[in-house]
Image 1 (cartoon, helix red, strand yellow):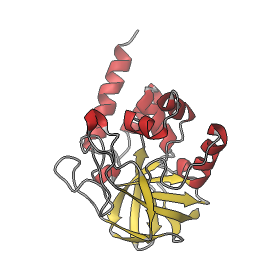
Image 2 (image 1 turned 60 degrees about the vertical axis):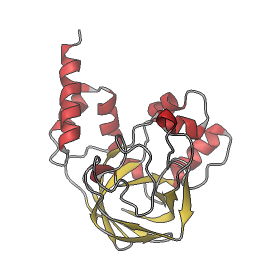
Image 3 (image 1 turned 90 degrees about the vertical axis):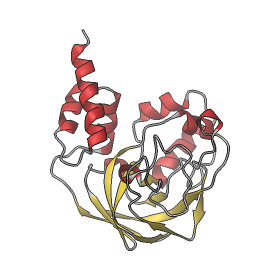
Image 4 (image 1 turned 90 degrees about the horizontal axis):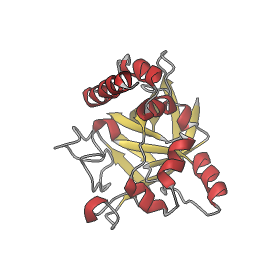
Length: 221
């Protein structure tokens, strides 16, 4: 499976983050981006993209959310339903792809992009900053119901990525859990939570979250 990079995008600080903080969700196309592993979410470098601003480092950034990818085809789907143009970077993605079904990605699969190597880590969870960016009524619920969130990626090997670069999937795990599956687990699907907890690729923070989620679900009548 392969596609290509349609656009690489970097965020600059603009108003619109939580508690009046600036946000980097408004991403604009750039000629090239440099990616690297940013380290932990708290105390690390923030985004995995050099020069990409992150306003809320408590909930964004770090190794598991180093780079965010969205398919151009998904932006086009939403553009048709919303009746408005959605330029590359509109969802706050660093990579806008074409010809690659990002939302069919298996968690843990590896992409070779430009001179970088990236690994799919999970879904993007919609937030109030995203809703503010979109200015669409009920956006978070609508986006969550659609369930095609795009994918976060970790940086396995740093490098440069340009528009037009090929995206080649070089490794796919055999557990078959897709990014939307993990998003449904996040929403509370107990069977999927159990499957997600079996993933070797799950980091400690996500394992803690899903363990608590499962315990809460099992206590519910």
